[in-house]
Image 1 (tube, one colour):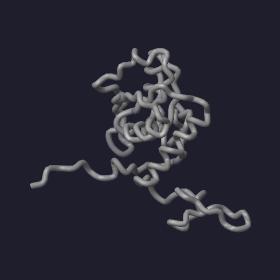
Image 2: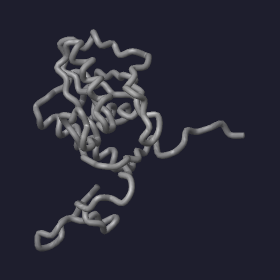
Image 3: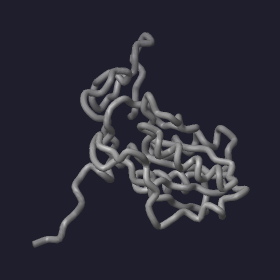
Length: 182
């Protein structure tokens, strides 16, 4: 979210809403498509500034697919993969544990590689921890990146764009799936 400094060192404000940037947002965090593009580049810049140069970007499907692709482009990383993990079934509803679904990631091909695991959010952190563990057990040097991280996550990502407390509405999941026209 763009912020503009106020005179005399006062807190910043978001000129689109006139709400102080440090104030918690009323209701869920809402990420728009334009902000998503900026967020992806800023997340990639954080990775580059750290000195970590991934050979492979692995996206956690489904939420991490778009951010993983955007970060891979921003980093200039051409080798990409994905891993399907189901955990959340609805808003604040989840399975007892994250479950890896087919098709499977070719984890053995990651041995000896520098791998960046990318997801949309580290909420409980259990999905991210599972994927990082799978990639690490395959013999890769692994780091993780997420658009968002929440307090209480069991695995704080190595790279994070924003930290939030509440639910996040992403542009790719804000609307119901399309249905056939009658």
